[in-house]
Length: 146
Image (cartoon, rainbow, N blue to C red; front, side, top):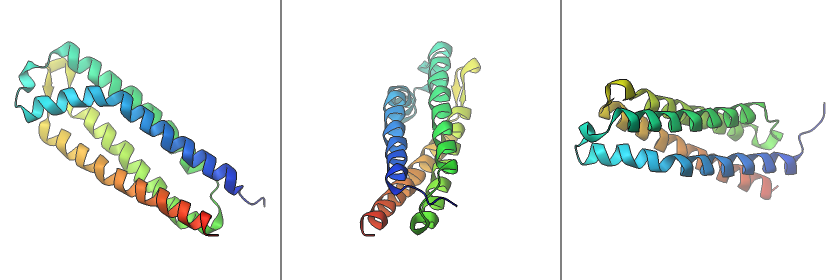
C-alpha cells in the first residue's frame, strides 16, 4: 500500500481552507442582511425577492462546502495525523450541517426567517469553525515537528 504524500496532503488541506474562506466571504453580505434584520428586529422588512436571493446564495455556497467535505473525507492522511484528520472531517461535516440549517431557517416564499433556528445554526457553524481551526493547527504542528 502506498504511503500518503505529506506535501500533497498539506496542499489539499490548504486548498480546502482557502476555498472555504473564499466561499464564506462571498456569502457574508447575504448573511449580514439577515443578521442585521434579526438584531434590529425588522425581519418583516425583508422581501420575498431578497430572501429568495439570499437562500440561493447560501445554497450555492453550501454545495461548494459539500464538495470540500467530500474532498476531505476521501483524502489519504499520513498515519501520524490520522486521528486529528478524522476530527477535521467531523468538524467540517458539522459546519456544512450548520449551513444547511441556516438555509432551512429561511422561508423565502412567505418572507419569514426563523430567527431562533438562524441563531442556533450560526452557533453551530461558529463551534465547527473553532474545531476546524484547531484541527488545522494540530495537523500543521504534527507534520512540521516530524
